[in-house]
Amino acid sequence: MKIILAEEIGFCYGVKRAYENAVLYSEKNNIYIYGELVHNSDVIKKLEEDGIKMFTDIDNLPEDSKESTVIIRAHGISFNEEKILRENFSEVVDMTCPIVKNVIKIARELQDKGYFLVIYGDVQHPEMRGLKGNTDEKMLIITKEPQIIFHQKVAVMSQTTVAEKKFEDFSDKLIEINKFSDIIIKNTICKETVKREKEAVKIASVSDSVIVMGGKNSSNTKKLFEISKKINKNTFYIVSPDETENFNIKGETIGIITGASTPSWDIKKLLANLDKSNFS
Ligand code: SF4
Image (cartoon, rainbow, N blue to C red):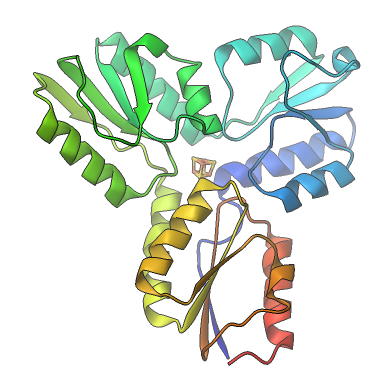
């Protein structure tokens, strides 16, 4: 059996930075994370084993917050949430990915210039909630459906983890059904996720079967799965390497792709499981 491992694999830059800092701080402080640091249950479990606690309700802060450090996750949070954390914790470590921060900066600059923002993204995604909470929310809409916009001066932007082709199709359709006097298209998709998409196409085209591993709620893992499945029907989505124990995978060549929040220890275990098995 031949394994083709994607080059862009495991944690992306932003997740690696957030994870490593959380572990580093936990060595000397009482640490909390507000929300899931990343969309991966194995990573959350490992952080908890390291003594890092998590809370999700901003109206229900931990009792020892004044003696604790809180980490802001890679996806970012709203301005109001950050304010509450700064008022109630002894220290706030902002691990919002710099690429996400840059998208917020671009959004603010465009709004300052009078543009209404149409953001191609999932309104429930933490990154989108963070963006909305750091800009003028009356001057934006977050959607995946092209629709009639009652503004003339419009800028179209994207969530960092959406598929590039879908963003292009969305922008084209939006322009087709509206009559804007001034339109800016700003592709704010993270380059790292674009590289992963391109690799997914390549790997799916040359493999007999493909395994896509990542968190259940990870939008970038879901996207990679969809891309691979379209090209190669023998594409399997797994959350944990343990799922490969009774796996019915076929072929001589197995491609492996992961989402941006899949840890290296899961990849090692997946490779060991495949090595032990008699697939093909
Ligand atoms: S996918 Fe890109 S934008 Fe999102 S956390 Fe990773 S590096 Fe940052």
